[in-house]
Length: 253
Ligand code: PGA
Image (cartoon, rainbow, N blue to C red; front, side, top):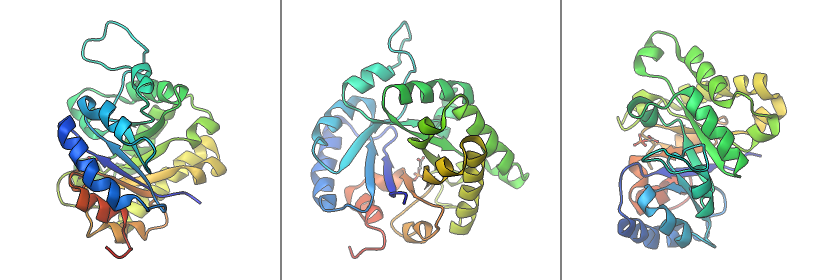
């Protein structure tokens, strides 16, 4: 049984103070919630405080990216080792905003994924096609290539601990969510590639989240798809009430 995972990607929003205020409102709302695993990805300046504030709660914190080396002359970077030392246990890798604005490639994602796993992180690997790629019938080839490039060299037991987030780029921040059946179909495709790479048992254990304009209004329908194991939520994770409603999908408010 794959435990659903609800992840909030705060992107470049929230100061440390705003992050702590958010937690003060959010934690009581999810204090008794056991069904889903919950992870928040704050900005780097808030991360350490958020990690501390989440100790002994049901919610975990993650970093939005990392450098794969432990240390070195890399201006502006934060290393996997440093993030591990502050108690951070999750990392987002390959988000399309990192790919398109910050030069992330399948090769650099692969280095980060290997380093993250070696330091005991749970990586959330983001994959997704552009609108043009989908319209040209390239979705399958794009996703298989992104996945193969990112996980090259991983063993099945390493792969089992990672999480995939399928985020069609045309759905991110646009209000155009993928139809649940389309997302479900695409998740099956990703799982079929995982089975080719790591075998059916490992592929069946890996959680595949959907991301792209998830809201309290569409989460229940998305989660009704058997291949959707949770959500990576941007905009709608920025207020505690909205994200709590997403986490409690299908349950009375
Ligand atoms: P969105 O962002 O929910 O605002 O579309 C999702 C993401 O980029 O992870």
